[in-house]
Structures are given as C-alpha cells and as structure tokens.
Image 1 (tube, rainbow, N blue to C red):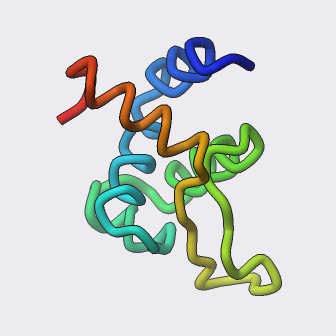
Image 2 (spheres, one colour):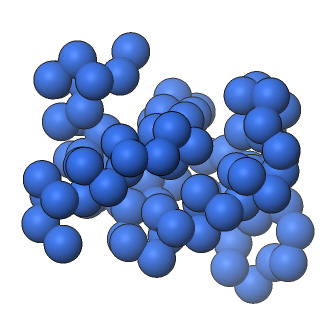
Length: 91
C-alpha cells in the first residue's frame, strides 16, 4: 500500500490510531500498557498491534517472547503518524 492508502487504513479504525499514538509518545511500550492507558481491552489493542505489524507500521523488538513484547514505530509508521499529525487528524 502507498502512504496515502495506509494513512486512510489507519484512520478507518480508531484502535489503530490509539496504538500508533501511544507508541509514538512512549517510544517503547507493551500492549497491556496501551490497553490500560486507553481503557480498551487487551484483545482490542493486541488486534490493532497485529494489524499494524502486518502492514509494517510497528515492529516488535522482542519477538522471541510470548508475553511482555515491546513495540516501536517503524520508519513507515513514523511517516504515517507525522502525516496524521501534520494534517490535524490526531492530537
């Protein structure tokens, strides 16, 4: 997908935006921490993270672990996040 398509894809489901925002603000974070901060279920956040990872927008730094995985935005994820912010589509 091109950047514009990915941007629309991220915006189409709010959990994706929430996850990207939390990862951007915290640089390195776990799904459980995002769920707690956003008051969403862990399953909801985990699904968003799986979707974002499949599209190359976030990366797991601890893939060998089954729990307590930590994630960061990829370069492409950072581009999309900055585009959303620049266009005032997120806070």
